[in-house]
Length: 62
Image 1 (spheres, rainbow, N blue to C red):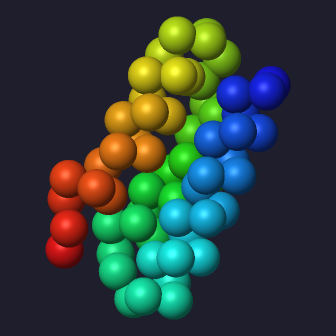
Image 2: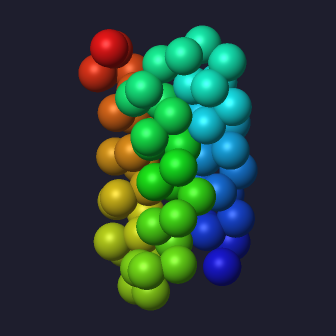
């Protein structure tokens, strides 16, 4: 549950940043970070997917 809250807060930050800057990648990654913890129940995949979504806007700048 702690990981879900952590990734959700990162997601909210990315979502707000993407919306204000009109950038699609942080917006989508933020939305995904807020939603995916509801569908992944195991800890290791949760952490791997969450970290991948956090670093995606850094490498994919559109």
